[in-house]
Every structure is written in structure tokens, then in C-alpha cells.
Image (cartoon, rainbow, N blue to C red; front, side, top):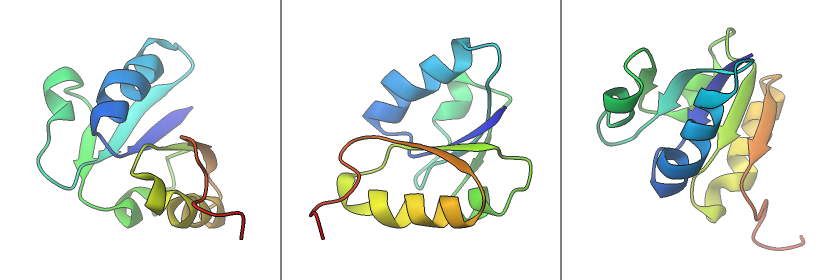
Length: 98
């Protein structure tokens, strides 16, 4: 399963990317980094893009992992689901129950 990671801050770098990298059935393929290409130092074969939209239009991405600040979770997850991707999102999913 080809994985796209949205966000390579502390959670993406320390928790999610390393977990994805050690699971044989998963392949970290693309990472959204708004500032730089830090993930390529650790994962040289991974493509970096500047926006979630660039990742979501890639038909080869099966699973999207969202590791951005809480305020963007709902919007990004909704876009990923509408793009027919499987999704993993950090908690919380939304800021309010509404």
C-alpha cells in the first residue's frame, strides 16, 4: 500500500514516518512539507510536495496519514476521503462536536 503523509512536523517525523517505514506492506511514497525537504534526508526515495492537493491528486497513493495541527484535520480528512483515499488521522478529528 502506497502511503502519503501530510505533515512532517514532530509527529510525522518521530512517530508516523518511522512506523510506516518498518511495516513491509506499506511504502512511504510522498510527503507534504510546506518548508523544505527534511524527510528526504531520512527517506531518500520519498517525493516531497508543498500541498495536500498535490498529494491527493496522485492516483498511486492508497493511504493518506494526516499529522497536521488539529485545526486542519477535518478539512484534510474530508478532502482525502473525497479523493477516494484510505485515511489515518491523529486525534482529535475535529475541534467541536458540531
